[in-house]
Image (cartoon, rainbow over all chains, first blue to last red; front, side, top):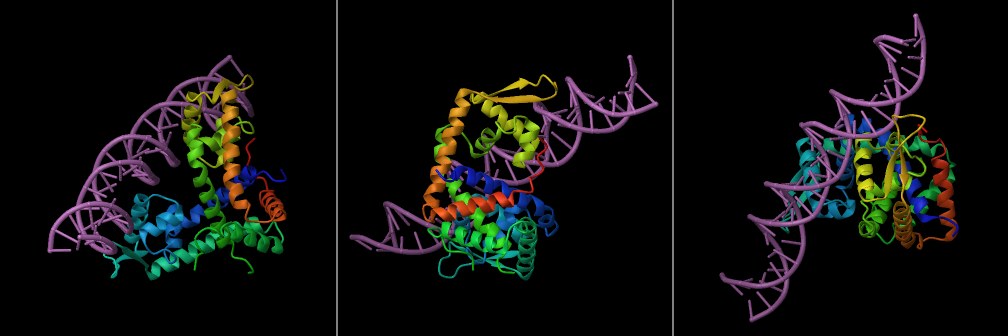
Amino acid sequence: MPVDAAQLWTLNHRLLTVVLDACSAELAELGLEAKEFFVLAEVAASPYPAELAARLVIPKASVTVYVRNLVAKGFMRREIDDTDLRRHRLVLTDDGVAARDRAFAALARAFDRRLAAIAPQDRAELQRILLALLEPAPEATS
Amino acid sequence: MPVDAAQLWTLNHRLLTVVLDACSAELAELGLEAKEFFVLAEVAASPYPAELAARLVIPKASVTVYVRNLVAKGFMRREIDDTDLRRHRLVLTDDGVAARDRAFAALARAFDRRLAAIAPQDRAELQRILLALLEPAPEATS
DNA sequence: GACAGGTAGTACAGTATGGAACTAATTCCA
DNA sequence: TGGAATTAGTTCCATACTGTACTACCTGTC
């Protein structure tokens, strides 16, 4: 066995946790909890609650909560879908787009502090491998 | 900037979430919640609650709960540390070692199903890069 | 149209999580 | 030695999360 997959998973998990933790204060300044940020970040690609729940692997009931908070904060609004009245199409407000982009930037800065430790081509390599690993999964963000 | 770090983080996070979700049923059969598994997996390397909390980036109060559950399930026990009577040294039982190893194997299988999609040298490459990223050792209080 | 079977989203209530306060033990220093 | 400051771990309890049940709506069949 050349590489232990479980170890790989654990290493990776610790990395992501540490990075997220490092920028959670910045997210809070933007008025975002980590979970809310995940929702905000995916809304453009998956604008319906059920889609978001599947995409983010969280319960529908949790999506309801995060969306409620994000709507209350003025980051998005719900619109009835004309073709299916059961569905709520989620639309980002200008504030929502701004907050999302700033949050992405904060996350990128936090991760960059780690990525600085590796060569640029390794970074591209990492992206290539991760994309390949998610290949059988739903398509990437827009 | 050649590669967006935030996208990299998000891709990676989705990958880990999907993999963990894929083996959570198997963990449940072993009598383990995901969080409990993380604790069980780290006990050998960080045998004190405070160390575990720092290592896993979770609150001390949560470690108390997970350790209590794991003790109740017979996977570990607490012992007073002879050199510092404030500390609880955590010791895995035989059942604990067995459960941990099976859980690791389940996680490895779930990840392997993904890793099968990429070339063996990419897997080694991934490990090399992740190890480099964690090089600036996280604030290990140990 | 009416009914059966299925899906989107929400509400409720029980469980899980974690910040702050607390207890016990240790260390430091006069 | 005594006591202030520090640290390990736990407890308390307010908040967050989520399984289940529910309402509203859709689709297909007759």
